[in-house]
Length: 75
Image (cartoon, rainbow, N blue to C red; front, side, top):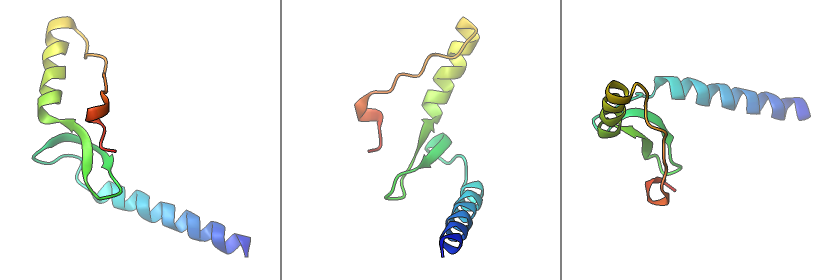
């Protein structure tokens, strides 16, 4: 019985991994989609944030350290 449950979990994880690979990694709002909320909304790095990182790389030679504020979190 335990083997069936474990196989189901492994199969479910494999299916979720495959679905993740099929999802677009960017869209019109996000340069990189890190994941999705339980409600199905994407979260990640916006195009504006990605441009700011590139600007910092050019000026300072490195990307800025990420700072996450509570209002930035999708949950």
